Length: 411
Ligand code: FAD
Image (tube, rainbow, N blue to C red; front, side, top):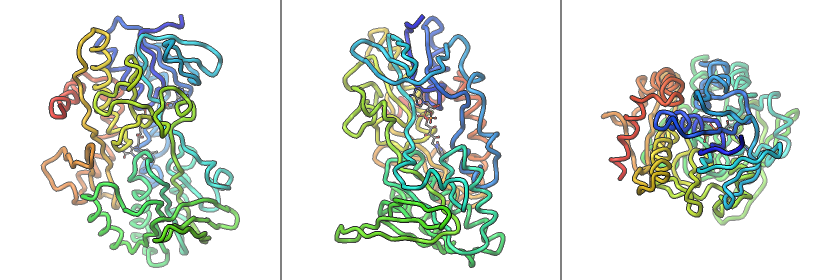
């Protein structure tokens, strides 16, 4: 059968969470989940893979063990949306029809936008925590760094986990300090933007961290090309008067955060907004033109931080509103833009940045969130992965209730 009550596109953090919650609420609805990959990744763990704290394996599980019972896994790739016909066409030509559609295929890493990067990754000190294939190589690069220059790049926003490009930089600097090698390495942050972090409240503790490690900040630097064997990185630098110049830098280690955008099949679909992301209402997460379509996660055209933490609070909003719509009731669940970025300022130290739409600071604990803490590190290293695998992806009833409490606050 190719007709479902609900079709979910993407079986990542958002897709599995929505499927699991939906199953808890309504056993009778038929649900199909379209996901091409047989491995599911806890991507927030990749920062710690790059820092030698986790193995890559610890962050991955077989997709089949996560698909909730009685949910049909369609192991393929969605290619074309036909929302007027309530249909989705897959890469193998199969056509699925639906009563409601949930779109959450994540975002696209545009590696090829940087000349030579794809060929350079994985050797000559060129690494990236943004790829399962290269996160472990980051740790090799950090360990073998004896001197010279370590460059960390950050492309234009939006990207997923906007703090990740600098988290691994601080961990590298801390490791070098412990090895008494920090003064032999120039650590530099090359960012396309002109602020260290998008939420001003969290900039002072990050700036102190930068100063403490002696890191050099190069604002308005966008990576455009990498030559691995020659160990050269090319940047476009935008000057104060808007004119651009080309800068070529030598490096011993280069950690790249690739440019990111909405998946191409979303960009070219009737579901996209002008920037290519899913056009959804920021509060209800309902599509702005097709009321039986909802979107969440990194693909959504909302201004929250693109994080798994955001997905955690978006999923119950989508599930509640989708069910309300089926029942002909008013959509009452509201997402407040919550997202979280545990900024690892060193081993055993995390600034737990939590904030909603408009950069409104929304700490979960009655502590100054600007202070780097061991407790927040333990949360990141132990509790959050546990919560992800065992509560969020399983649609734990206790956890759903806890998360739904945020609706009332947001409304
Ligand atoms: P994903 O989890 O990426 O899942 C998307 C799924 O869609 C994938 O399984 C993919 O195979 C599938 N898919 C793609 N194309 C198609 C298609 N055509 N058809 C069907 N399926 C498709 N978040 C935090 O909360 N805290 C952190 O500390 C944190 N750190 C991070 C560090 C790094 C290095 C990275 C890379 C990410 C980090 N994140 C963090 C971000 C977090 O991982 C994402 O925000 C989250 O995974 C988004 O969930 P999603 O379901 O939208 O996308």
